[in-house]
Image (cartoon, rainbow, N blue to C red; front, side, top):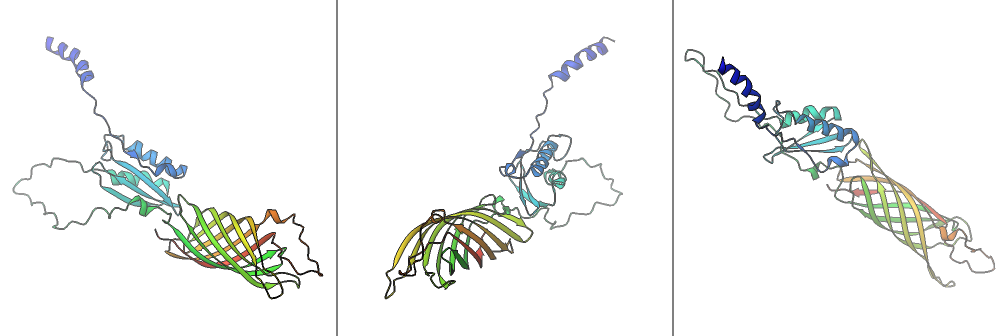
Length: 311
């Protein structure tokens, strides 16, 4: 009786003194914070699941990363040993189940003794199939190219000057998180004048653009805001002196690129520019005097070309 009472009294103290086992949950990777709210919530749910010590995917440490693209995402799981495995998931609802499967560790279970009279267990195959694909780095899973370089040719109408021009544009951009800052240069030459007194001219434009990419299946739509400095040149003729003017313009451009995931993509672009400083100019055409260089108040272009987008 005394031993029973002693055991009953000392049991709670023993339970309280037993140290609790810490649970090492998986950490959140660096790119998760850049994704949309639904995907971030799915990663949080998976991290919560790794806090259950009773499950094979619980308390194993490591990290969970995710990159969203094309309405889907690439889930990347790095174990405590440093090995990384990645899988494609179709929706946020699939993240927890796929992550638990990737994080699960084999449980060591003791097998009952096998009697000599029973059939022996078949030997494991000499070359078991690999259990995981070759890991892909986070940079290769990213939807953004490392750089985009393009060449576009486009006819262009110059308002107020009333001339048609033909031009070629070269640009280079450095995408990040679907944003695309770029530098570009364009040369325009005269194609036709649309009235008798119109004065053809040439121009060299150097500018910058800042745009945003929107993927739509195999199409990428990229609207941008632009700003440029322009050198406008009226060539010298036998009976007319040449003239050079400086101009500044603001504008907007929309590019349509396809196929979106290809190294070389076709480009269809449209853009418009305005020259705020030319709206209030007092330039008039006097039929009794030689025509002067009349700077355009706006231009409109429609072009086609190619873009190279290495990843």
